[in-house]
Image (tube, rainbow, N blue to C red; front, side):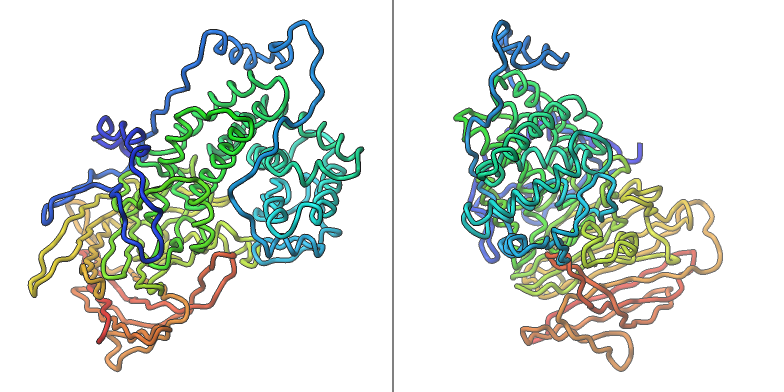
Amino acid sequence: MSQLLAKDKAKDASVPAKASQERAIPLGANEEPLVDGGQATDEGSPELIEPGRSLVLSDFTKPEISTTERFLRFAYRLGVPGHTLSSPFGKARKLRLLATVESPIPGNKVAGTALRAGHFLICGVKAQISQMDFGTSAHLTPPFERTIHGFTWLRDLSACSSRDQCITTAERVLSSWLNANPKPGKGAAWNVGHTGHRLMNWMVHAPLILSGKDKALRNRALHNLGETARWLDKNVSKADDRLSEAAGWCAITAAGLLLPEGKARRLYGESGLIKALGEMVGDDGGLLSRSVNGQLEAIALLTDLKACYAATRNDPPPALQAMLEFLVPPVLALTHADGSLGSWQGAGAISADRLSDIIVASEVRTRPLKDIRQWGYQRVTGGGSVLQFDAAPPPLTRHAKVGCASTLAFEFSHKKQRIIVNCGGAAVAGGQIPIRIEQGLRATAAHSTMVLDDTNSTAVLMKGRLGKGVTEVEIDRRLQQLEKGGTATRLEASHDGYVSRFNLQHRRILIMRDEGTELRGEDVLTPVGKRAKRGKIGFGIRFHIGRGIELRLTDDKKGAGLSLPDGSVWMFRTSATDMEGELAIEESIWADSDGKPHPIQQLVIQGMAPRSGGTVSWLFKKMG
């Protein structure tokens, strides 16, 4: 296996129960945590992590149900209609929604206002509703597919104005979509993930599409809603990935709650959903895709499903609540000092407001994990600074949706300024970011780490997939006493992504002072094997610099000054041992929370490294 099972699996299996007990106020930009969801250690003692990072499946059992309910679930799985099981000798009840759902997650008012003005606003790109091709064979980019066929725009529309003012727009788009997709078929419109989101959004935001004066459209929408639920019953297991399958199961469960004679469907959906969640989430609550976007999507799905239970005055299975509380702490580990998220596995820099909207709506109160053993990200904080470190292999191909070769990359922020970033944005390519550069944004060079011979540490393939490369990462985390006084957190990690091609192992050491004003690093190349190869190989160590920071090289070309927008100055210095390298400033790009690309700069140490190995040391330090 490319990723080995952690040796302490039995110990970590109890984490879900623990996660449901640890509650505190969600972290704001400058708030101190109240409950430590991470791993406590004695000061000064090493905090060791097992080598061979992996993602072990969470063990969430199906809810306990009676013998009668077990029979209903089994019969429904075999294809017996719900009305036959609830009223064997009666007629099927008229299709209608049994309750009105109030989703606690707000939408984007700007995008909703644009809809009322006659066009979609998706990742910063405007598209007129009248010119949109809603057909299943239309060639839409991924962001447009998710929005158009998943009906995620309904949330934005509901946020921009009163229901009466939005109904006309909702009915216009719904009618156009139904005309282009009169019955279930194939293609993007009937992708299980898109279909699951569409059905959920139809039910959660039903007042927008079922409260108008057009009775024919209302009846047509209800008929299509029921038909879509039956299609998902039969096809949910054909999803492209686990998160899409979970979206389908959430929709099936919600349909069981909100449609007549749905008890058997609800039992069927709950069973499938808990199984799908257990298979897509690791022991620390991180998705196997290692995707920030995916993590937030899963939280939002379960939050809306909880709202469906509340609307029908039913209690969700305890496992669903435990899973929701399990999903939140890992994503909080990737928050920067300003409360926004880091750019990992293709995500843009999701804003603090958007993250807060989802976390507050989930009603889960906890703090970020420092050491996410299975999800693979390390977090160090101190003095208003935040360090995030990718210390795990990329996701396996079967889990990757927008897989990135980012092993041993890091991001670093101080107060409200991101100093070191990754480019991000691959997950929203097709909006303002051209789809043609999507693979480039997933490459190792688009992340703040070392690259050998201009090749990726893990092969980047088409359609978000990854190939051969990093299979094991060893990580050591500990507190360190500094020679001149004070303490620091020391992270040391290595990966094998370049061993098969160049017989060289990349090892990175990061040391951040507790005051947060100094970050030291070393990038080490170590030969692997009995005989080191002769000759040299090209290398590049890239530090993508945050937006708004001005760079200036020193006269000796061994350092650079960083002038931050707040007026503070940081200094960068580098030195090499047995490696010939020069420091240069190059152009780069960075994707913001709306998927808009911004021009930034990067510091690049480039040169030739001997096959016998070598070391490059560097330092970021706040001046004054």
